[in-house]
Image (cartoon, rainbow, N blue to C red):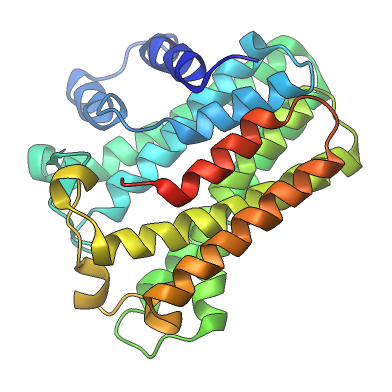
Amino acid sequence: MKTYAEYQQMVVAALSQQLASLGEIPQLLLDAMDYSLSAGGKRLRPVLLLSSCDALGGDVTQALPFACALEMIHTYSLIHDDLPAMDNDDLRRGRPTNHKVYGEGMAILAGDGLLSAAMELMLRSAVQQGDMRAVRAAHAIARRAGVTGMVAGQVMDVTGEGSTPTLEKVDYIHRHKTADLLTAPIEAGMLLAGADDATVAAGCEFGLYLGLAFQMVDDLLDVEGDAAILGKTPGKDAAEGKMTWVAVKGVEQTRLDAQKAVEKAISALDCIPGETNFLKTLAQSTLNRVQ
């Protein structure tokens, strides 16, 4: 197993290379895509994919295109999420959001381009490997990023603005808008490593509770966070009537619920063979996030 920084560096080094490998992209589109893709961030999702694959003895080199694809999907979702029609944000990772630099039209196309590039990278890799494990991994990522996963959560998030928040609605948003895209790398990484169904199911349970805890802490940071550290604008959730765990449960109960979710995530690791200390430590660190 590698360290978080080592997995992170693998992804950073590969992202531009993977994008360039797709062929000649119009320069303005490439610039807009790269502006958000290279803006930094924790690279949490690709790190989760690589470490999950590695924990079960898989080949992280063959998993790298899938890790990069997942980061592209995550970045596309952020570009679109920041648009005026969605969250209408001016700041992302400490820099002006994509549409503030390139305009709304090009920001939409940059997001479209990253999503399309991600699908192409995964399918090309699956064809090259000639292995159903790669096909299943690509399907898992596409499903959890799609209309029954992340996009479904975004729909509830957008349509729920200004209405009375309920635990049922907030739970749905957290499970899909956030947790699905944190479960996808665990599921895909384990599939690439050839894990059996029981192990993959335990991995998905870990991803679900990790995702719920992650979003609960995100909701807390919107209330208590510092813009200079967050790299985005705090206080927007309450101002725009967003469906959040804090809006339903309050700050203290949200903090307790996040702790319980992390405990459930760690408990799921007991059913996973291989080296899981990396995933356990990562889950525990979620509670101490400042950005």
